[in-house]
Length: 107
Image (cartoon, one colour):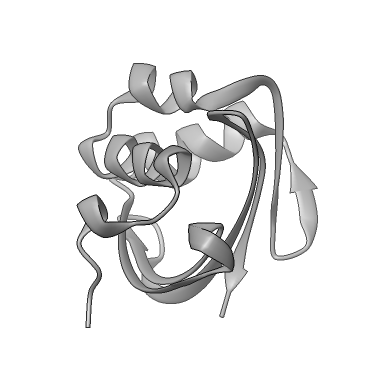
């Protein structure tokens, strides 16, 4: 059962998912701290290259199935034009209102 984005507990994570699903690059970048980092399947990746490839140029979309840790951990169905749909996990580190790191990978 999908959790409505508006019901995600953490405001920064809610803004991240909203921007990702809307393919709103400016809003997406605004929720990330200037020195934000990320990893995919345990490997640190270049944030700009990864988001361009996995989100913006491939129509990425996330449907959240579960949240924990106050909304900083998600289990979701993620899909894009490159890989189709897969069950994924997302962990966020938030400082104030900005995401300083996110980690994703197959769940």
